[in-house]
Length: 291
Image (cartoon, rainbow, N blue to C red; front, side, top):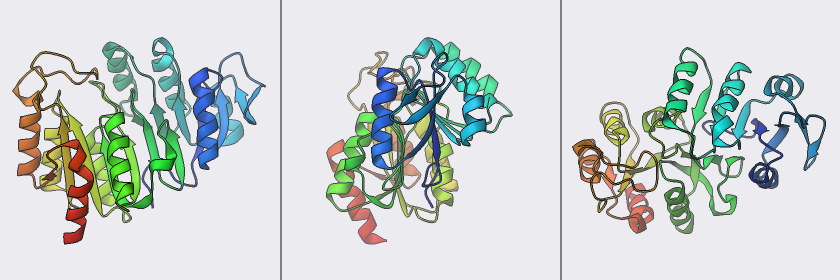
């Protein structure tokens, strides 16, 4: 099976009438994703590419049975959108929105405690199970169905890695962009647990970057819990300390945030390290040949 999304996914688009929302709704539909509803307050009763628009997530879920939500809502309102989807008992929430303040995400994390939805993002490209379902903004054509899972903090590097794998004939089971913010809804460990339990995933590619300790936590999980091989690349080896590099979470605030420390931890845990982004595909190919 695929993790998070598959042919049974019934997608709801929050912010469907906005430019980004309608654009990616069209591409999700063209990829074969079952987009069953959209939500934009005040636009209920209209349609976007044949998809009915509702005024609230609760109403949309009641009438369509949607079981996944993707959020294209401006930063000022995105946390309310996440909470609204949570209140509607949405199993999967994918928040694409970039620029949500950290303190707003602190409130979201507090709100999600004790509740069941799985949040991917914010500031992420989403999730795709190649050939089955696209819940995100990635280019579907570069993906190939297969048995290598991909999890990444960087959207751009996700695309680069996937393109390399596909060019080598290495298909992917599911690709998950967890986002580059300091407080993502799901961490590397959360997604690694899903890949470990997925019978159709035989190996995993993990793409990290500077800032935080997510990679060290992933290393601990890989060392103790993962039975499947992991290829890892960590971006930002040349980044200066104390300077933010792109993502809100990509800032070195201590020794642990450095790429060198993350690489050291992942290598010690048994992950195979790709020296640079151009070698991730070939490194994965060599690993698979040894299995």
